[in-house]
Amino acid sequence: MTRAALALLMMAGMAGAPATTEPPIRPDSAHRVKSVHITVVSTMLADKGVGEWGFAAVIEADGHRLLFDTGDRPETVLQNARELGIDLSTITDVVLSHHHADHTGGLLTLRRELAKVNPAALSRIHVAPGIFLRRRKAGSDAESNPTIALKGAVEAGGAVFIEHSGPVELLPGVWLTGAVPRRYPERNWGPPMSIVTARGLVPDSVPEDMALVLNTDKGLVVVTGCGHAGTINTVEYAREVVAPGPVYALIGGLHLFAASDSTLAWTAAKLRAAGLVNLLGGHCTGIEAVFRIRELAGLTRRAAVVAAVGSSFDLDRGIDPLALAQ
Image 1: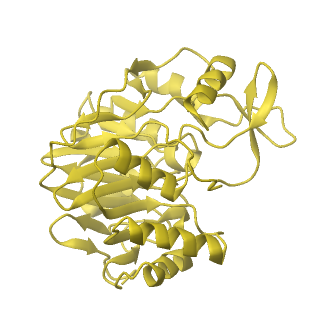
Image 2: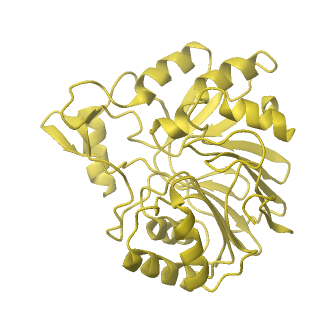
């Protein structure tokens, strides 16, 4: 989907008051993050804590901390963080990769509980345009976008949503892509859904899908929620707008669990060409998909791992899979 098409959808289908909008800024690849540690706190496999169909990760970069997505159930990320010894109350910024409930479902409870300790906890919520578009499931007239009601409830508690209309450097060397353009026809989303517009219903391709990118001396570290924009679309856009170097690590959901053999082979070839070194594939990536990409992209067992709750990636030490996913 082009940015012009997304803008038309926004005008036709926006529900409620708009979020605060921050304009895109010119990319500057000069700054490199020196220290990166990413811990998965929501996914299906659970070495510690509890698993669920969802995704969330704590991002640590040069002393700064972010929460990327919030899992599905209200209590999952809270419980897992507690069992992993991670204090979420000091995190002020959370990124929502897209509108699906398995990435946004924990936000309201997290905000309410953590604000009891620190009123600023998770008070700034970063999203891309399109996340609040009205949506419908096939055969239903009911609203199916959970973030519309979520927005009002979270804002009532004092938090703000910030929309990024393009790539933005959120912290030194830490970027959000904004909505990722669809250069390749990767159809990385699930059951048919529709977006409500003034002209009727149009297919929902999850146009707001965005990723987080850390720029390091070893290459880019790319974090995705589901990768609905497409794994390769996301990776290549990150290299275009942040820095043109190799992809040192790809972490999160890639929505490849139902991908065909030819799709997996194509994806692996593209990732290999992008210089991929580490893959921590969780949530909707699929266990078999991780193994196939490991083989086809020429990665080792140590460097391509199925993510579990508590598994982590460190810029210096690589992936710690814990016991379950080794």
